[in-house]
Image: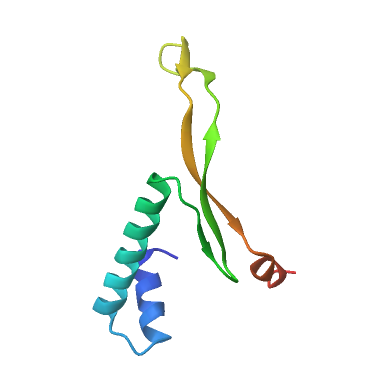
Length: 90
């Protein structure tokens, strides 16, 4: 499902128009991004938890030059689904 399909589905299952759903989705994306940038976790009960985790520095190979490349450490966004959501797939 892509973004447009998600917006249509949100509109179909709510009393909101597609434009209103698009604004809600954009607001959610903005809030999630800004919260994760500040290092805050975002928990949605019954759905899951968005958080950042530390990725250690690592070595890699540049496929074009076959030379070694050092990737720095960084924080990456992650998601862990809730038990409630996982149970719906068993």
